[in-house]
Length: 373
Image (cartoon, rainbow, N blue to C red; front, side, top):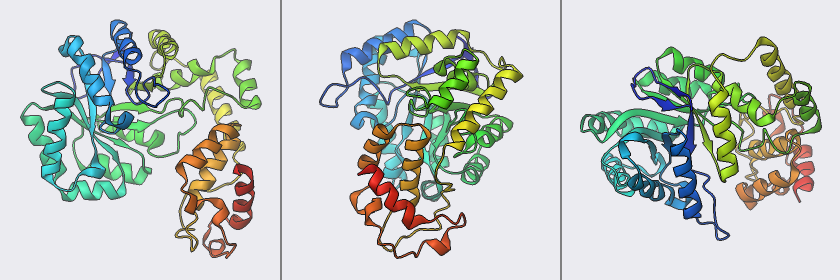
């Protein structure tokens, strides 16, 4: 295992972090606790010392299970990261309440890396008004929290505001070779590094979509260089010297062992110009496959019929881009409410004049409704 440090921390942190959001599960959806504990112990034995969880993961069962693991090992040798559920915070008293309960659930007196969970425009405004920074500094002074950070799923301008607001120790952002200009993206990474923040990379495989199954044109490009898609995806993250931890949610022992193998050999600034050019080719090929050039500006909203236009386009684009209709069909059914689905479009055309990309929105929605039907 290779180790890295954050500018504001003396901890030697494993370059591979164990994400506790995708534990193995039983048929009823609950965590397969013996299997999950076996994986955590195996990871720890092989050098992983950074374990990341959060209040809602696995229907709030992730933190307690990690707490059980902590009770079975030397706590001082484990770096624990968890997150404040910002959407549940209505007052400063709530901040104290949730932190206290998280400490109990984790069976620990302190949290090494504490994040504000999934900050965005609305939640950031609310947390600022409630005085979250003062709370975090108080908790740090009391020894309940060692390092302060935030996780992020909004656009770069919002990331920039949050990053510049306080002296954060670290941030957790979506980073992979495809989404270099999505959410905080590579510009967010560069800003964080310039400000002396540690960077935790999440979604390195885009939820597995960057490795299996691969569109034929993408597979052909990787095979030209005799590269495994998994190794290539992970290597791109670890090549970034300012990235402290690559966070991976692993659901079985095979995935864990594969990631551990690459964590031993993938180093910072080790990719050649030739290799980086191949990444750029693969990225361009993925982007060429996007059928609807929606920029997610949301100017088309609100729709009079409450159709979730940009969200629907996003799911459909991924289905085509990753050549995986079955998986995205399930995501469409699960994450787009029935009242917001494409078949609710009445062809009123109110959206057409608002779209800066001049997309024929009603026509596309009809096509998507038939595609996912």
